[in-house]
Length: 250
Image (cartoon, rainbow, N blue to C red):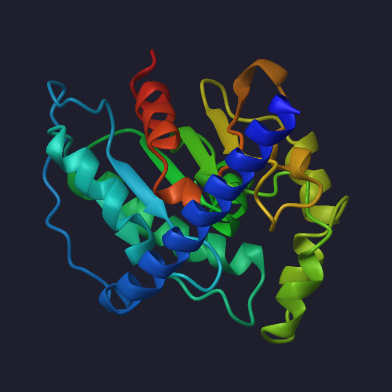
């Protein structure tokens, strides 16, 4: 009885946190519509963060998704933290990866860094993994940390079809061609993927599909957080601590 009560309390707390996170995200959304011209500088070897960081939002969102996370990183003295706005309606993952490629190339050029790190939410994780695994993005990303990304696809992929006719719903299906390709394509040497996911995330069904799998297996790490919703991952202290720990890992 006590265990059941405690679990119910955690579920209720998680639901309230998720609702609050969505309300905050909705209020911040207008402030992220316009692209921000961030001022790049050469990335010092003495910087607290070893590489420049690019924050990649998910479907139907924009750079405002990372207002809280970026503020925390800046307060820690981290440098060269970038965001991107890219269109997700009526497109497939490969076309979005082209936008990401343009942004990464600009960051590498202006900071002089050989590689960057990426923190991505939801669909942004699939877009980023596609970029770093397939084509000219190979070797440009040292570490990708994802939040609530359906690495193994999701049963709710059909929702993407309602936004506009495109291949996105097929890309996100369980066992889709893209999902299989990402799973079977070896990551570049020294590149890593860290997935922070939660079975409480209603967009990834089943919840365990938020775990990243691929080759080589030791280049993938999964961190499971209980009772944290899809949008809540953007504002979770536990998720932020895991991000910091993994971006600073040698």
